Length: 184
Image 1 (spheres, rainbow, N blue to C red):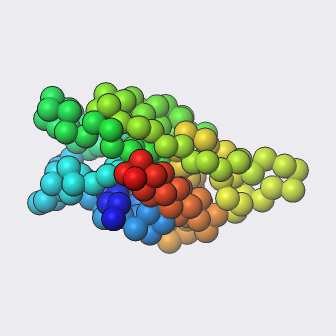
Image 2 (spheres, rainbow, N blue to C red; image 1 turned 180 degrees about the vertical axis):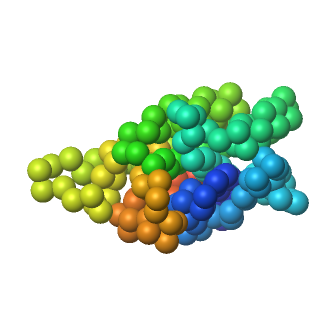
Image 3 (cartoon, rainbow, N blue to C red; image 1 turned 90 degrees about the vertical axis):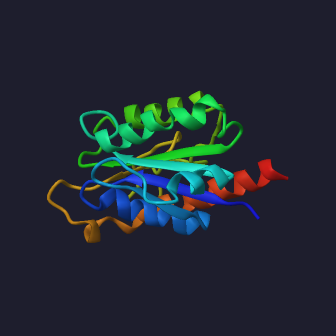
C-alpha cells in the first residue's frame, strides 16, 4: 500500500482547508505545522514512512510562510542522510490575489523537493482558459507545477470555492497514483 503525507502550514485556515482536500484525494495523513513552525509529535516519523510527501504553504510576500521555512530548514536532518531520496513530492499554495506570486512559492517547494533528491509531480490538469471558463472550474487559476487556490483576503475558509477545492482533491489523487506507479 502506498502512503502519502501532506505537510502544511496554514495561517488563517484557507491552506488548511486546501490541505484537507489534497489529503482526501490522496488518502493521505495530515501533518500540520503549528504557529511556531513545529511538527506535531510523530510528524517526522510520518514523513519518513511516507512514499509521497505533498507540501503546502500559503503564499506570503511571494514565498512560503516563515513557519513552513522553519520546517524546511529543520528538514536538513533527513536531507543529510538522504532519508527522503526518491520519494514522490508535490506542492500546493493559496493566496488572496489571483496571481499573488504563487508560482514563486511552488518553485520554493520544488527546490526543496529536489534538494531532498525527490521526484516532483505536477497537476496533470489542463487550465480552464477558454472563453466559456467560469471561476469555479477545475484548475481555473491555471497551474501545472502544483495546485493553486485563491481566497479573497476578507473571506473565511468556509467560503473557498468548490472548484479550487476539487482541483486540490484531484491533485492529491494524481500524486497518490503516481506514487503507486513508482512503488511498483
